[in-house]
Length: 405
Image (cartoon, rainbow, N blue to C red; front, side, top):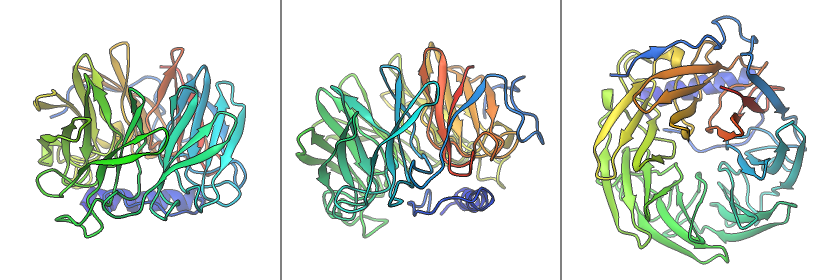
């Protein structure tokens, strides 16, 4: 575990204690920047509950029935938002829910923790009106791929066996011409760093036929793919966490490492998914970026990389900008938006914008119990408003929020 990962883990435990977190296990996360601007709407240091004028808390989770700890981001389906909670529900194993842009919330499905899966960390995708996602545990014990209708009928498409087929899917799925693609954090067979496997890339049909496309070896090609994949011009791209890499993989399974992160100013430990903007990939690293944060471990970076592997750091975070940009970026009319799980003016995370040339601006610093804390997932944009989730805060169990830049 890196120094930053340990400090982040320690800090998150403190946040959980302060905010009376719900229970539930989770996988261990980890077991020169451009001009910086200070936003006039960002909360001032010490004003923990003073919200930016454009911020609105849409929903405040209060388990057990309605879920707790929404790790995942949201999905927009015709103006209604859909998401998952990692915990809560009647059995404490997580939920699938919907929420309107005005804050009306309804639980669609409560996981029971057996064959149907448990602890969904990933968000959902919509394929022809049916939602698809993954659970970290359940099924055979090492996670599932499932579908759920917008009325709440759930079906397990595949239960991972935990061996060569993969184990513990943390990331969500993508749809490429009717076939779903995803990653598992572990499994795939013994590798250089773990007898439990270094993770896989897999495909699965909507009827449940699963195929492993690549098993990570842990040395040259990286290990522990936490992030979802992204498709660009028919090729899939993704990241592995440690050793940290950016890779490409064809839909037939031909894998290639495009960049291996060196730590330091280059960044380290990429956790979030990549995005494609005009043929170029953008992403974040959870750590690295310089020596001015966490005794040299770094607060994370935003980087750009071409499909041929030319990488450059756009921005290196310092504590007041945010720490640990775990949420995937989105592109809105040429401006990128993202979240950090910690840091900012109050230490509980931020929503930020960054231009493709590296101009960063903090839009909102979370205050803790008042407006939420620790946004792990990224945001989505619906009608010029950003929507997202925080794992903690509100009544201590997480929130759905809206923010107009």
